[in-house]
Structure formats: C-alpha cells, structure tokens
Image (tube, rainbow over all chains, first blue to last red; front, side, top):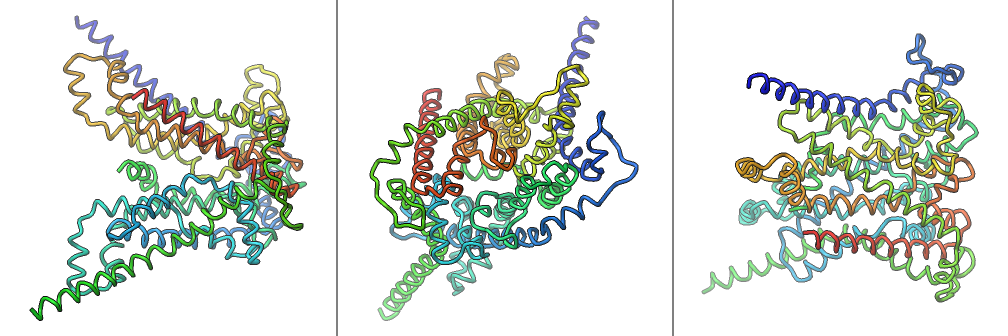
Length: 283
Length: 301
C-alpha cells in the first residue's frame, strides 16, 4: 500500500519535472536566436564564419554598430520611427477615445449604423488599399512626407471598439452628475471619462506603438527617400544591400531595431500578456 | 408654468449641444476611416476593372483582369504557396499554443508569468528583424542550424534556397515568432472557464482527459474560433518575412506568396489595375475561408 502510494507520487513529480524541463527547453529555444544575433553582432567577420561557432567573446567588437550607423542613416531612421510611432499612437488613442465615448454614452439616430461601419473596416485588409492610397497621397503630394506616413494612421477601429466596450460597462451616474454641475462635454471627457479609460488605453497604447514601430509595408510604400525611411524599411534595405553577407553587421542593425520594443514590453508586459484585447472582444 | 417651459428650453438646448458634441467627437475617426479605408477599398474594386499605370489615363477593360488572373500561372503558383503556408502554419501554431496554454494554467506550476513573458518576446519584435536573424541561422555555410544538425551527423542543408525546405523553414520561423501571442489568448480563454465545472467533474470521478474533452475544449470554443480565424487571416497576408528572406531579386520561387506577388505587380511593374484585381481576389478567398470556418465551428457547437 505504502509502496504503491510512493511510486504514484514519484511518477507524478516525474511528470511535473518533465513539464518544467520542456518549458525551460522551450524558453531557451525562444531566447536563443536573440542571444545568437547579439553575440554575432559583437564578432568580427572572421569570428562569425568559423566552425564550430565561437560561443563567447574575449573581446567585444562594437565596430559593427558604428558601421551599421554609417552605411545607412540609422539615427535618422530611428528619429522617423519614433515620430511615426508616437504621433500615430497618441492620435489613435485620442480619436478612439472621442469616438468610443460617443458610441458608448450618447443616443442618437444612426448610432448603430456608424458603429457597424466602423467595426466592418476591421475586415478590410490594408494591402487591398495600397494602390488607391498611394495614388491619393501622390495626388496631394504627401508621398515621402510625415503627413502621408502618419495622417492615414490616425484612427483605428480596434481602439474605438475596445474603448466603447469598456465604457458601456461603466455607469452613467458620473457623466450625469457632471452634466448637472454644468460641466461642458469637453471637460466631462477629460475629467471623468479619460481617467476611467486609463487601463484600456494603456493596453492600446503599447499595442499601437509596437504595431507602428514594427510595421513594414506601409512605410515601405509611403516613403521613398532615405531621410524618410523607418527602421524596418532600413533593415530590409540593409538585408538586401551588397553588405547582406556581412552577418555581424546585419545582426548589429537588427539588434538596434529590436531593442526599443523589447524594453518597452519588459516594463509594461502585464498590459499585453493579460489578454486584455480578447477580453474586450468577448464583452 | 414659466419654470417648466424654462426647463424644457434648457433641456432642448442641452440635447442640441449633446448632438453637436456627438458629431464633433465622431468626426475625426469617421473622416480618417472613410478617406483612408472605405473609399480606397471601393477605389480598389473600381481599379481592378481597369488597365492603369498611374501615368497614362486609366482604361476600362471590364472583366479582362479577372480573366487574366484565371490563366496567370504565376498567380496560381503564389496562391498554392500561400495555401501551403496557411495549412502548414495554422494547425501547428494553434495546437502548440493550446498545449502550452493548458500547461501554463496548471495550478501547481510555478513561474507562469516568467514563461508567458518569455514566449511573448519574439511577438514584440518586427518580422523584419526576426527574418534577418533567421536568415543568418539558416545560412548554408556558417549558419547555426547546419552547425547543430552537423553535430548529429546530418548533412548541410540549403534551407531557404532549397525548394523543398524553403516553406518548412519559413513556417518554423513564424511559429517560433508568433506562438506566444496565441498562448496569451488561450490562457485568457482558459481562465474564464469557471472552476465550478472542474470541481463538479472531479466529484463525478472524471479523469484529466475526460475533463479536457468534456469541459475545456467545448467551453473554450469561442476563444478557439477567434484564434483560428485571426491566425488564418494574418497568415494569408504573410509578406515581410518573405521579402527579407529573399535576396535582391526577390524571394525564392517556393516562397512567392500572393501579397508579395501583388506588391511586385503593383510597385515593381506598375500594373496597378491587375494588382488591385489580385487584392480583390485574395480578399474574396480569405472571406470565403472565414465563412467556412464560422460554419464549421457552429456545427461543432
């Protein structure tokens, strides 16, 4: 009896051990390519091209980073990406807050129709629109400008939808008391609605920021000159350039491009990995 | 009496004020979505019936582009490649993510948050940077993967350049990059199933496997539907990875997918009418596939 119990227990902990081992193995598999890329970025070309590979460096070479910054203006790409990501994120949050508030708390004719129209734009894939938008932007001379890069990105159906869902679950009392106090709609929005929305806006802001930072086809098509390119387009240019076989250089550039989103994520990960987006969609 | 009319007047002006606010607040979003999403998609539909290079005037050609696409071998090939990618990528991604999510919601497990965050890191990195890293890993001469399989005595492979291995290589890379996203979605779906059901099942003596089949999988169906449909839709649109994994002349033939073909026709050869036709056709295919999935899941439920 006791013996049986013991084997049952040990086999149980054995399966637990197996699960831990698998998860740790999977974690290593997940992280390893990043480690490998960063390690390569500090190697000389000769060090990168040896077999068996070098796993640790006595001397870390930062030349590749310097070279990456001189071959292409990665500083400029950074600036463009920051401007593009920050402005379009703030803009999307702002327009989504306004529209989400109205769709959650106002009553008027055609409200439902407008809501359905906004949601249905989520179904339209962006690449179906690239030809007409490119034409439109070139007609108003917005190709290769910040305006062309940013303005079309200033509204997002997911933002409107999530803020609306979030606000419908909040009682009207606050708004009504604000109105009775004679507060204007603008001050109700900022003093009452905005603070309520902070959790969902935090999730959306990271989601939007990372999506803009990583977006590729859009800046690829809307920008043309080197001064207007973003990080992702710059990386793709480098990976197709004559330097495409200089892997330490390639990895240095890739590292430069991926560090900001990773850092932001590690600080604010709870807003993304708690599945907020889905909980909003289900509500 | 005077007081009542006064109130009514005030209420009326308040209502008018509110309506004006509603219009004002909706305007930015609606204008941008109208100008940059809705109108262009109507435009794309119109352009798909024309021959146009943006320089010479647009020429209406009726259904010519649609007839052309039916006979276009390159399009057919890109569509087959895209389907290969979707069929290879989606089931593995979804099942794998579900298994990991089931493990990560086990009560006894320690370090749940750690694993969830680690698995999410590649999701946060751009597909462009990830593809650059994996292009190096897949390098035939000095890449890490060949070095590793070499330790086990396997011969060197050409991964991306090999027409049989290119698609599996792309699929492996994108699964590595994106599984953490679906893990998070599945976890939030699993946590929303009330413990009550499991407790009742335990009292009835249901074992672990029975609980999985009788409780978890049916109650998770809405999440699964959402995950499957969004994963299918995004995988039909694969583009960034293919562009970076290729060389100066474009991706290898085995990785020529529809969105890249559209990009090539539209912005490489400036056949904008035909590019729009490709877009519309792909959109219809995605729509059809989504509807079939909805139907399928409804029947299951």
